[in-house]
Length: 208
Image (cartoon, rainbow, N blue to C red):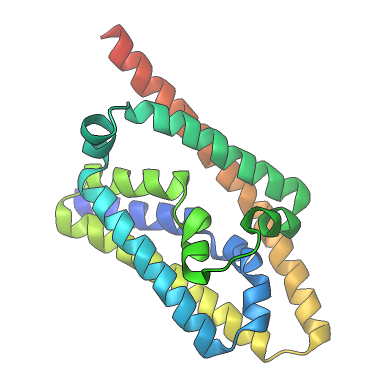
């Protein structure tokens, strides 16, 4: 029962952090310019890249930090939380312009989609948490479910935007922008929690 409970929690956390609404704004110019087939191919490659990295991190993320990189996981949580918080703050106050500015000119679209918004501090942490809280099959499956839901959500948004008028398209973009700003509040909350987790892990190790 514990694995099933953690499975849903881990899948939901990763899906929230991937945030299809925010991603749709980040990819809005690509959604408008690319054909459905081109967008699907590009997004699928980015999803596969991200899912592979998340799966590997779920299997040995803690060991990667401690044994390979020689740094404490708490340090990653604190620094990653700060970066994630900055992204959330910029989006809350600047909206989609902040996201587009951070992406810049993407020459390699799949890699640009995967980094830095699919593979970021929050999603890396969520993948490692999934690996520590669940047994191997469940942790990988929870990641794959979250990635598929995010991928499917973006394809649905692409499909809808392709078949509505320009006037309505502007309204949809405004709606997505508003929902994205609201969801960014949740992202900021998770970022603060990452920092607090890092501090707790550091203080426990230091005082014990």
